[in-house]
Image (cartoon, rainbow, N blue to C red; front, top):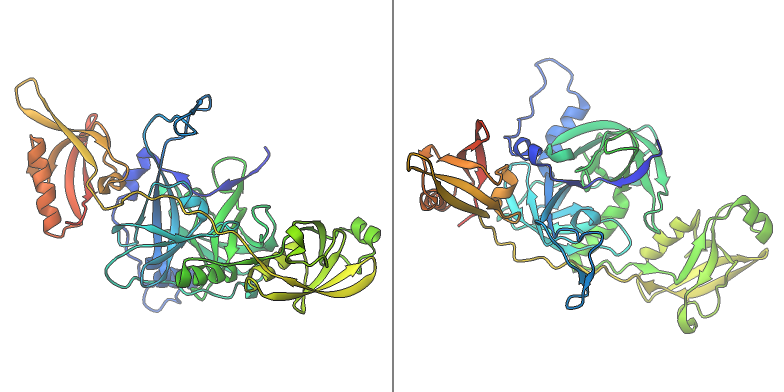
Length: 455
């Protein structure tokens, strides 16, 4: 079966919501006298900084839907959908790193910390061409955060540890090795992914990849799989790229990445022979997109092989794109060019990449998000039924479902909607994060710790 590149962000599965809402297990200490396991030591050190990212999106329009002339968009039907990914706190002030594809097209975003607390999140910024997004939450106190390592020091065979929320199972830890470096998976002009065999699946998107020093060396982003599960071929963005982007976003909300207005390609052996290039390194210019020669000044032409950028050797087109991205917009850069065996030094002006347009996030002030109705039983007594669950509400993450019959709240029997809502409100005023709700679902009864919005 042919494999396909698959985003790791997963869609919420109703049966897994209850599992994701269960209390988290404490990390056990090593037995007395035993050598501490290095992986367990890293997990104990960093897991509190890893979060779940929950995204609410509008329903997809039917494939045969016709555009609405009033909105210039296809009509939609159905309920809002929920998807999940992972993230990690990179600054105690509440800055959180995740993938761009996790939060694309979101109408609401929530972050659930390792302690189980749910916060509405806003998007600070994200690149147009790279799969990264910076979120922020207001926790009211400093949060545990991670430290970035130097991804350039990672070698094939080095041990790495992934932590995230695959399929909604929070704080899942897997380990493996770096299988390859500088992988080009054709996702962006800057691709230099790590490949790893640490098991990552849907829901791991945006989660961290740690080295044995407990430093983030990558962000899990993509899997190559014939189906929906991991086959040991995953890809992570390296930490040096992450640090560059997120540092700029935290400071200004913009990346202001530089670029050259050209398209380039790899120097293949046959192109080297045809163009007379000195070797298989560098970047061949395939086209020039410089209007009025305002930036390249006519000095760069198709067929040129760019050998160095500001005195730094260029290994391939992605290397050139990354070096240009780190150069201040509007500054002058020096290119060493081979043109038919003749070398020259050319001076060009760095252009700015367009910044990504941020999605419109609705007001995410927390609400309970439950519509309840009371229906009479045959003996005249009422029962309270969940008529609908707002995917933006705090209760949605807890596993409460449409059709659930609420029997008790905080061990108080309820038979009226006002009675249930009053208990929820009292618990919120008491600064309780959860209320214990006994529900009847089919023939089964189960207690659900339902998240409450702060008052």
